[in-house]
Structure formats: C-alpha cells, structure tokens
Length: 337
Ligand code: WQD
Image (cartoon, rainbow, N blue to C red):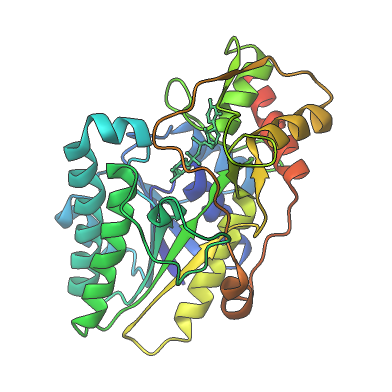
C-alpha cells in the first residue's frame, strides 16, 4: 500500500517512514523543509538501504498534491505537516492558522478529488488543555487550547469530524500525541529543533553536549510530588509504530468513520524525574537551575491509553531510560557530524 507522508522529513514523520517500510508499506514523502532538513533523507537511506521517494513542495498547493497522489497511486495519507512551536504560534497566530488548517483542508480536498479514503491525522494532547482529571481518556472533554498551535489541532479534529458527518467516503483516525522524545536507536535520524529548543529533552541533550549553557526548569512550585510539571513522555519509535497500527485498522473500515486515540505511555513522569533519569542513564551531571514558571504550561497530564491497546492492539514497548539514552546518542552523533 502506497502511503503519502506529509511532513515526512520531520521528527515524527521520518520515524514513521521507517516503521511503514518495516511493516511492508511504500511511503512517499512530501515536505517543504520549512521545519526539517534534507539530511534526514540520507539518514533514512542509511537505515532503509534505499532512497524513499520524496517531493519538495508545500501541502497547501492543491495542484501539486493532487498530481503526486494520482501519479503515485496513493491509497492512504498520514498528515504530519504543520508548524508546531507553541510560543511562536502565540506571536504569529495567522501563520499557524493559515498553514496548519490550510494544509489539512488541502489534503482533504485532494482525497475527495482523487478518491483516497484513508487518513491518519497527527493531533496532540494539547487539545485537553489543563484536564480536570488525569489520566485523560479520549472522552475527556477538549478544552480551549492554551495556544493557537493547540487550537489548530483542535479545529483540525473538528474539520475531520464534520467531513465524515457530511457522508464523505473516507475513514479517518486522529492520533493525540503526548510528549514525543528520543531518537532512532541507529542515531541516523532524530529531533532537529529549529534554533533554541522550546521542548525539554532537546534542551537537555544540547545542554549536556555543551551547546547550551544551562537548562532552566520552569518552576518547581506546582501541586505535584516534586513541584515540577508532569508529562507523558513517549519514545518516538513507539509513536511511529502506532501510525502503522492505525493504517491497519483503517484497512478494515467501511468507508465513513472517524476515531481518535491517545498515544502515550499511560504513565506520568515529572520534569525533575526526567532530568534525574537522564543523568543516571547517561552517567553525567546536567547543569540546570530552577527558574520561573512558563506561562501556558499545563501542570500535569498523562494519557489513559487503554483504547489504543484494545482497538489498535498497540502499546509502548520502550522505557523512559531507552528514550533518554537514544536522545543522548543522537545528540552525540550530531556533534560528531
Ligand atoms: C515539557 C515540560 C515545561 C523546556 C508541547 C506542546 C505539545 C507538543 C510537545 C508539538 C514542561 C518543561 C521545557 C525547558 C522546562 N508540541 N520545560 N525547561 O509544553 O508539554 O508540550 O510540546 O508537537 O503539543 O504543547 O512540551 O517539552 O515544551 O515541556 O522546564 O527548557 O518541560 O515547563 O513542564 P509541552 P515541552
């Protein structure tokens, strides 16, 4: 089955391309490299042993997208392509609404025209905002997103639901990621933050390698056991495998369905626990200090992942230790290159 992977040169997209091939699928990448690097394609070749077909253009370009979908006889699409910097989205909301919603709508319009019926959408636990109860299930009510980025994911899900309600002959799954971390065990692909990382783990590894002076922990006075925020940190390879499981499920669907799955470990770890684990696993001391809270941060959230276990027949295999060892190996590889 030929699967179009939009944003396939990105962090989660590239790891998903590997797992698609491992599962016997034929991925085709579309990426405009606005938030990824072409070197990822070489990393994929080093892992897979062949050049993954790719096209360089913006997913908002209906004609180009339709042309590729028809030429490559695409039967399924995994839509990752989106801007994802929470802070930037607050400064520049229109850039996020235009790109993230525009590309989603274009993908759906091309699917309608070309008769593609399977879609997996990259959503986010950010749609839950600060939940009243944790762990969150897929039935936990969505809350006003903390950022325009998060809102593009929430609105994206609403668009998908409305398209299915209109009777379109499509089967669609939205996957709500918690906090993806780590890198491929080969250290051939991993996270490539644009500029100063806003996410925790890349900032930790860049501090440990000496690229950043010091990590600031954004607050240790929260209502949690050690005072720091709690998150559900999931290995990116586990996350990638869930996309294959989602495609498998779509193949068995009837042609007008929409469903949502939480993708997490089902466990919460605090920021300070993660730092301590990173130091232990990699046998090093991290230079960090406690600083003020970051506006918009959710105090604690982690996923109830029973539904993905039951219906997708998927659950995480990798530990936090493995995620942090793989993240560190990747940072060291980057330095050597
Ligand atoms: C995690 C924790 C910070 C950096 C966001 C998006 C989510 C997804 C992942 C895109 C928080 C703390 C962080 C630092 C710190 N985005 N932290 N010092 O905010 O949970 O989720 O990124 O796909 O949709 O909402 O991730 O890694 O930024 O923060 O103390 O230098 O680490 O306060 O508690 P977050 P994060």
